[in-house]
Image 1: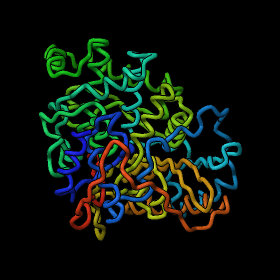
Image 2: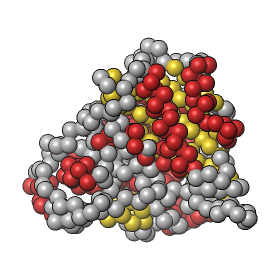
Image 3: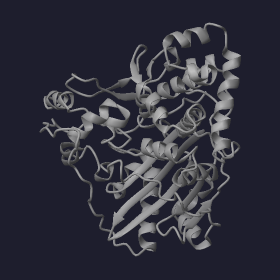
Image 4: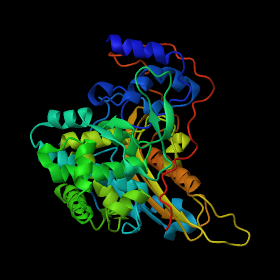
Length: 459
């Protein structure tokens, strides 16, 4: 307790730039993701300053698997509901693949699908496949001991090596005793526990973290019970010219994670690393996603079928947004909702007279993918739905397109359940019991990037 209070005193000096992204911020004790401790202390000032949304402050106890124990099967598409969703797409409907599952009344779920087989490179959404492969590998190593799995995630420290090259994504970095949480790219030599690397991969959408975790997944498969995440083990493996063997180990781990959880690799797969050096050292394969494949992943997560209930819950917590939101999730209508989210993009441009082609506005390709589980308490009702959106709408800002679609879907869910359009604020902004609240002067708005840089450059 003294260590935690001392940290609070230090943080009271300056926490002007402390954006974090996922995992409930009262979960430091389980994970030792240090930035969670900083944000737990700062939750009330950040909410007051507008740097964090009310729906980002649920406790870990509120993040639960809502279909666990239910005899649930994905229903057939509902024509009326599908018509409502299709109408939101307008003249660009051919450039979308969309799936929406309304679970507000789990005994009578409604499913809408438009171009459910729409196939697209998943971009950063493919990082959820990496997470699944890791949790399957942990279960293989400790089949009946979730505490041992958590200890490995909490106590194993990875050192960033050249697998992180080259990535510009900022991640939150903070160490006990430092006066502020900084955002910067991961650098070679940075050290953090496995939980933090997962947080960086799924929350900040760091390509460096994803590639490092994929390389470590290879080492975990190779060393088995002797794996310790040390640089010495990595040097011993990679120094032996093991690139071809690494490709097989990675493919086996990714495939096993999907198949053991009842998912179809032809509908969702991540075959390559996310950084230039990573791809040069481990030969990958193609990556793919469809609305049906991503919907199946999220439904299985809610059922506790991604490996097992413990693993499913950890993945859901890792997807929980606890910072300024982007793209689909940045639509203000969702501010008071809990959102479990991942997005990814890929765009390409060529010269075109009269058109300013650029980021998220490609005229050759303009992929944007979003997955969102939304939980909301409004007008005395508990709304719960899953939305999957894959789009390739050329020449339009795909961030604006997804944001507008988020509003339209949420409004339809509200209207169909008779919910009046006044959201209710309901988070508990007091710090969790293991920390002491400290007044934190917030100097201006928190430094939250307006967009997340999670693109895989077109090649």
